[in-house]
Length: 70
Image (cartoon, rainbow, N blue to C red; front, side, top):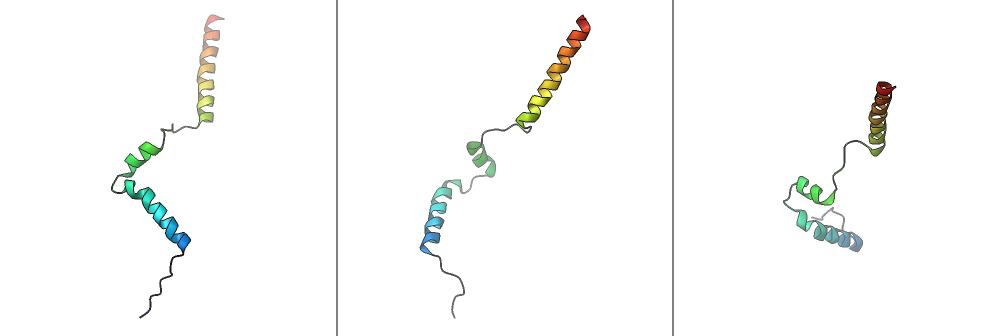
């Protein structure tokens, strides 16, 4: 009986062993622990929308102050 599985090339073997060595420290740990170390915290709003929101809020406050005093 012959096996119908394809054999790995030397390049594939090297890539698989490199991947295994890289991921050996991750085994058994939840994704939340792994992500918290690798990723910095990001705000859920893009920088552009944050600038637009601040412009509207601060601009509205300035216009209200001008309306109160003049």
